[in-house]
Image (spheres, one colour):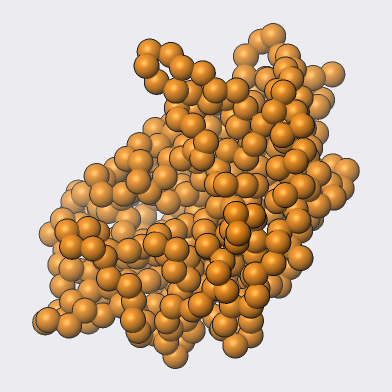
Length: 412
């Protein structure tokens, strides 16, 4: 009976067999692990593959470590995948999935996670020809599937390269193709500030936000790339906020999000909202909304965050301006239901059991869905939510038990 319930949670994302969850309703919760730290936790938005396996990533840009967990569709969990490279930034998050695999980007590494075994491998850690150490300085968060191969657009750079290269990554063969050198080739200190894609573009169009120096001039640009990693347009960004002295440049929190009409939006780590199109871009006013991320839902792009201490959202208008902020009903409904207590299935080890948490809350952000990444479309009107339960201390460190559940989501 327990195994059947686990399968119901996992497989219905691909088969459509789960009962519809209304806005703010919570499906069955599954415990995935005890995570170091307290709420809000350094976790990225979870995803699932088409086989129904769910993927959870412990990590954040400011945390130089990562752990990937896989909840198998048939029950049980695997964990312990900790592949990361680099010392400047930690995990950016999940960047794509197919039938039974998913990929995350952490530091300089692009990592494949097997949904069946939970094992992982570092893709293109070294150049196949020169054996030079390669760093993934940008990854467009989208897997392009064709009958012959699965690919992803990225920017890579070795320690001997003065500028990065735009490439297509063959995820099956573990090679890169369509190599193009960054232009202008006399650019100095090229730094990627963020990447993203347009969910409505079937060609796999992506964006990369970069800054670099030409002589004494600092340039910040939004670059549009197609599925062959070719730059089709370059947009100059004006009045981009400067970092404090001796601090790294201000990057995008999560990923950039396209909105189908040519606009690209992203929330910066300082809370500013950047909006640009192929003609250029700038920081936009937010009507008092303390923004944390950009989400895309049913054809509308939303800036999400808090206003007056409550979950709030504001639509991105066709003009590129940000509309009036309004309360987010789905988020508040979830918060109330979690606070009233939840029953959680623990299928990590035998014997499989259920436990009651007298109260719970969203594990990431100030309230449900208040995170930088776009919520994963688990089913129609349903996404995946990480839920924090009991906290405890051991050996001088705090830990929190965290579960995952499908939940109903709506954007008024």
